[in-house]
Image (cartoon, rainbow, N blue to C red; front, side, top):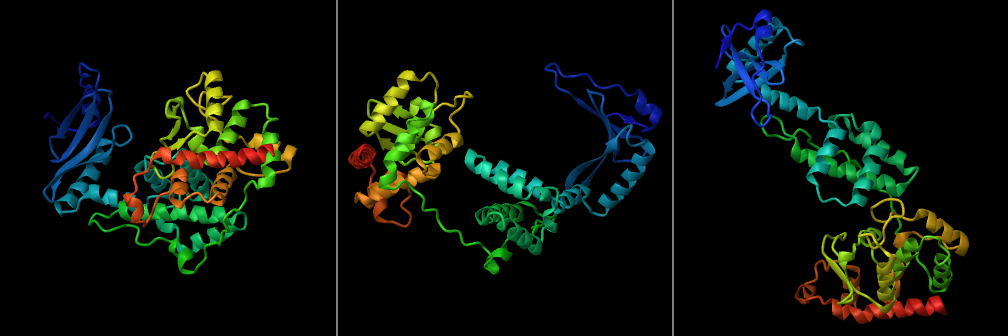
Amino acid sequence: MPRLRLSNSNIGKVQPPPFKDNGQSTNVLYRDDQLQGFGLLVTSRGAKSFFVEKRVNGKNRRLTIGRFGQVTPVQARKKAQELLGEMAMGNDPLEERRDKAARSVTLGEAYREYLQTRKNLKPNTLHDYKRCIEGALGDWLTTPLSELSKDKVEKRHRALGKKSKARANNTMRVLRAIFNFAMDRYEDKSGKPIILFNPVSRISSTRGWYEIKRRQTLLTPTQLKPWFEATLKLNQETTRDYLHFLLFTGLRRSEAALLTWEDIDFNEKVIHIPDTKNKEPHALPMSDFLKDLLKRRKKMNLSEWVFPSPRTLGPLKEPKTALKRIETVSGIKIRLHDLRRTFITIAESLDIPAYALKRLLNHKFSNDVTAGYIVPSTERLRAPMQRITDYLMEKIQG
């Protein structure tokens, strides 16, 4: 390893090392000929940086001081003497830097790391997180987590609740998850957690969570016909078919929108839903209505998506304009999830067995020992599926 008196003139004469044959940059270290542990790193791209290097507590530590041109050799040498003195006393500047960085981590930084660790989040969940953190708490993104006190969190929860109680609760639940992640993620140099408490706990301890009543909106038996007739007046056939598909399957909006033709088995008359909320593959038998709808769509569709977007190459997005149009024509205001609620309510009213109903909805059998012995069969769901379709058609045509 070459030695060099690290001065302005000498450093200026140092030439960058050649690139490797594959084009990758290489590095050359120059040791100062007077101060042991002080050196200069030179890359093939011409970057020159001062560093110190010394073993601390049995570990070799190399610490960058600064770039030549931004830091003078005299300044770098003085800083190197300080750092080498600390390292000689057993202090690890690298760990101290990490410790300092961990103590000053902001909500935005923790939020981004949290999302990186949860790689399988669905698009709707990511969108919801964005609304909560980047929207409702956007002014906190550059604030260190250590400065987000229980009082601040409690006051923000109240402020958000004045606009939307549900959004206030959801925002704080996401914030709580990020803090729980940070408490386990960020440690000081001795391995102790930097974040010692979760400020969202104040809302629980004071029973400050807003009570949110579950939505009960659905299509009643008498509303099915006028709502269905209003959908027939939509200009976009794909949107119309999508709404009908949701009503006759009870699927969640994203589960239906993300279906591709590879998920449709016309031979077995089965719809496969690989991407579900509970991450368990789901399969539904086709009723006669669904079989006709899908065959018609297959003949006219050149896209990989069963319900393609009319504007992009991707799947259909939530048809808000269409829902408003239907409301104007029929006087019935619903959301997409209300179609799932309608399907569930009808299935229950037809006295479909509980296990079959759960299978139709792809609900988990939590804490149910008996369910663990039942091997689910899509074919056993065909009759219940057809009964629901027959009921819907009776009300729509009646």
